[in-house]
Image (cartoon, rainbow, N blue to C red):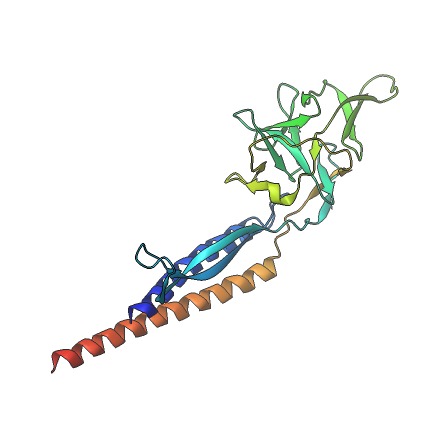
Amino acid sequence: MDRLIYTAMTGASQTLNMQAAVAHNLANVNTVGYRAEEHRLRAVQLQSNAQPQGLPTRTFVIEASTHTNMTPGPIMITGRPLDIAVRGAGWIAVQLQDGSEAYTRAGAFEISVNGVVQTRGGLTVLGDGGAISIPPEVALSVGVDGTISTLPETGERKTASSIGRFKLVNPPEGDLVRGADGLFRLRDGGAASADESVRLVAGSVEGSNVNPAEQMVNMISLARLFEMQMKVLSTADANDQAATQILASR
């Protein structure tokens, strides 16, 4: 009966992991630029040195892969000059605390007390030449190619002047890995080259691509699956007890 317990026990454990992932997605329904996580499972046979091909009587469930849904979220107009959304494929480069580079679609940016463009989490947003510094008392505008232009807020308004450009990249999806902080990095730990074909929508942010209705259905399905797996374990235990009683009575 232990073959039944192997499958049900490991299946229940992975079901709990999938429920946690769905709950995480639901918690980020309103998070700007969030990408939903998807988990896939598969059944494998228990392997050992004596049985490298696996034991057909011992099958358990493991996580096959963790996949990020790269479908773009909806673009929402905010009117803020430092809110930018990537239209289509592409990413915005930011600098981590250790100086390395990461990528995000959450384009709700702010200006620090030092006049540097940063994320709401305090990370420096990168331009083609490093950090982007904004002079005081200017009106900002961002072009579709990421160019940042300024105009004086006081006095005679003259021709806009360019002060920098957001570093926009578009590496292959397979080269990206998601970190625990929700930011993406290159698998090799390097920095992606700027891609001039990436386009922005100024005064807007990209919403989460989580479909709450779909995630709720997934949560209910996983809850029912977990109940079934617990029922299987309970049945296996009852069968073992019955078999023990029969053997003991002989």
